[in-house]
Length: 151
Image 1: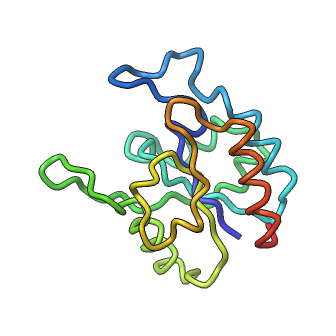
Image 2: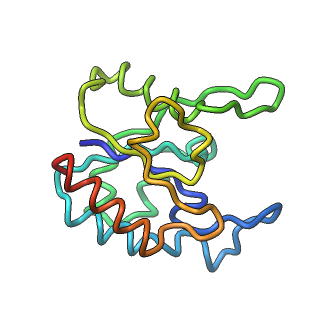
């Protein structure tokens, strides 16, 4: 099973028009890691836009070593057209990664705050509220999803 992971609005809240304060960046990471430890067969692919600025190794370095070892890749980077980020683009990047990896039949979910980035596979989306991130309600949904598909 694969979990496609976004960061902004998930592992920390987003702030409209402002950068996330340094003391809030990755504030929900301990909760995320605790959840994932309960599902040892889950592999993680980074779908966050952080992949445009950081290498896979730099991203792994933000996680505990046991969780970092389960981060297997990042979705492909696609360029903006006329500086627009089009609807369902994140979903397209995920589907593209699955196809390129030969894993299109592997069960997957996405943990993301941008529901508008998913159209065909909204049933696989565990949506966070962008200005909150991974809270109690999302944790319950994520645990239920991972349990139901054998994570």
